[in-house]
Image (tube, rainbow, N blue to C red; front, side):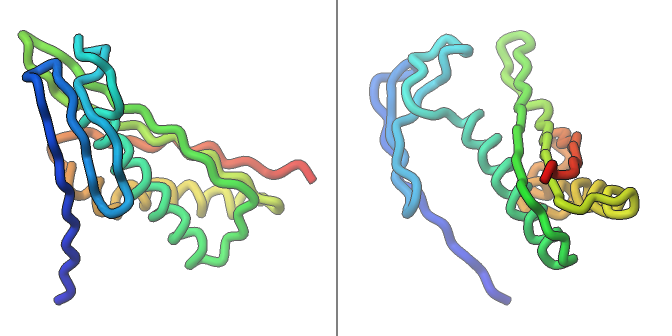
Length: 149
């Protein structure tokens, strides 16, 4: 078995509305509670970071699936949305929606069907999606386009 270890050092000061820092091998930034949740909105926050982890994992997984199937992608874009609800003062991360746009030079109906399956499969096989399964709903709304050459 191969096991990978990731580490992160964090600091925090000044209570709920304070600020902190994150320091990992490739991520160094300030953190705080977002303004939407009555915080100072300095740097990033756990909600953005969870969305970022989910979105980057999804995008990399989708790119790998397309590459392994020899699908020549012209462009690949992703917009992801995270939904957090507050009920009786309890914050709950409810849902993440990934909206990939996949552009190909030679799009056929058969290829479009195949890519739509890959868009769903990427959500199901991504490590972060699997870690969140059962707690956060993750959806995919793919847009597959032929490139204008």
